[in-house]
Length: 226
Image 1 (cartoon, rainbow, N blue to C red):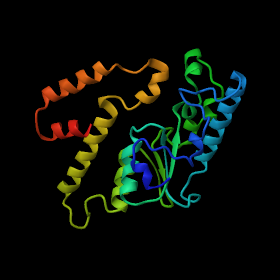
Image 2 (cartoon, rainbow, N blue to C red):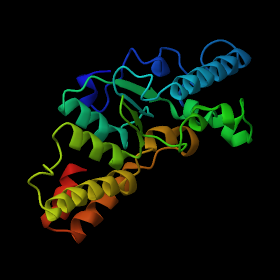
Image 3 (tube, rainbow, N blue to C red):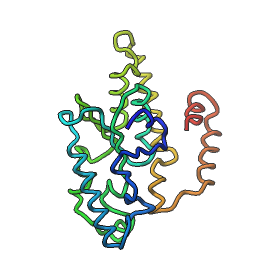
């Protein structure tokens, strides 16, 4: 939790969801025997779910932001909060914990705990990003970004901006969302356990095709940002 979250790969050591030995796609059994690892995994899932259920405008003392432990759609929100100088609780949940299922559970078609007890089921829309401060509880990255921007002076000034000015801001936000979510695949960090990583040649071909089709203007800027 802090402005250090602007760094996309920064792990917050104070976050219980990322504590040493926590189950991840690479270390999903925790320590000890398989049975002990499952008990530990279920315990972490239930503790994370309880933590998320407890987040509300009436309970938080400072903003809380919840997302998976990948860069993905969470990074722009963390970056906006950091640029605004806002201290916040940065809660990063491993995908397996969020789903309440490890890779081997998914493959076997089993669940070590019921879906209704998983962290995913603990949020209002069953999705992340999730943002909560003393005024609002919001989900979806673009909605959260718009709120942060307006609250902390990062959006166009409604007192002086024209409707077109705001539409231009919305346009940039929509393009950025499309780029992050649909272009190269933000979930590859966690897909590794289930499907294996896409080869470098795939990404190189995607970039070359995109570069060939869009030789200037904002398209080129989006490529550079990516």
